[in-house]
Image (cartoon, rainbow, N blue to C red; front, side, top):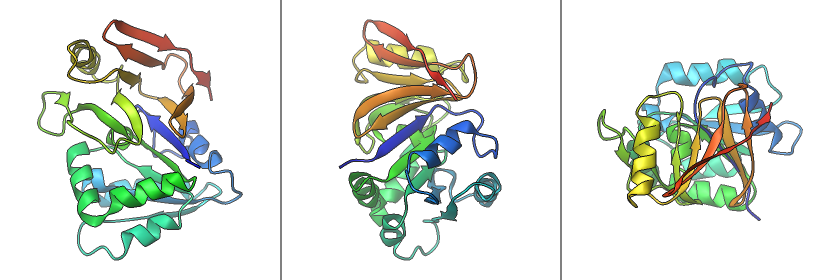
Length: 225
């Protein structure tokens, strides 16, 4: 059995009114899901962690967070107890490197295999795919060069939110540098069960998801939350 992945393009997240984050909890299928925030991509930024609690403490869930900077103690054990694991945006390359040092990459794969919900926005969406578009190496967008690979293909967040995302992603896919994949506008998300795409959802009326191949892009009409 494999769980769910909610890959969010960006936009209105860490917000008590976010419908995408409410869906993240609903997918757990339990009355009071245990949800862990992984702020690694933003170097365990304290303000980001506090924003997570501000957004989730009023929801029906048991929120926690896992810091990997400093002296983390048994991070895999903490993740093994979670129903939902939520990853913030930031530096995708750094996130993956630190996860691999601490065995978090393997713990996330095991959590997903047992049915947990994985999700995140920007870097927290890029990480689940084989590859993605990133600014991890400087202001110029480029291919990441390898993600966790739970989901096949590539991903691009902020498709309508950052002016260079769309042309960079379509060029990289067209030139065969990135495999075909998916692109999400801000406030849109791709919902996968196992590796199967179930639907695209959005919390903004003009937000969309796209399939992107070497031949071009195909918009996917989302379900409005």
